[in-house]
Length: 241
Image (cartoon, rainbow, N blue to C red; front, side, top):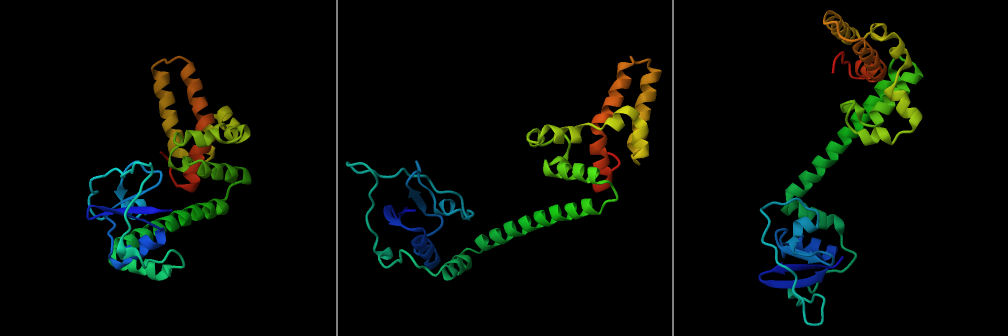
């Protein structure tokens, strides 16, 4: 990748990524200098082009200069005449950049730590599911819920749910026994708070002489939400949402 630099009202280059890294390490150029490469429509910060976090506000953007024959030409720059085109000692380059710009190293370490924590959390959930005292069928449902991101909410990641096969979607979204036995199924599974909540709704609807269709809605809720509610109880320890 050939990179051009705009510094001291001059456009210099092209330089390879290796040469740029060495120049930044030696202090010949700054991450705040403007840079351009083929494919860009405008000049950008060198730090942005090299995927390095910014340290100061972005400088004004200057379009590339074109000569009469088309394309981009830039004068040579004596300060880079001895720069190596290949075979750079990347360990020393990285060390030099990190010593002058410690925020780069901190950013990288922080991102890596966040990634490791996320992976460890997922692995811990898998171990927790494997150790649960439930049937293999329930463990399969729980893993599917984690796979599509329902661990953060049943109505999130809809398209992940749609990407499952029909049988997998049916396994998650419908429980025939909960549909047949309704609130009694919730009590049988230890979902006491949700069961009591549904009984309360049923009592209120009865006192209001609500149409029978509302009773079918409660039964439908049980059939459609029982799997997710049982996941919340067993994996996340939640009785309510």
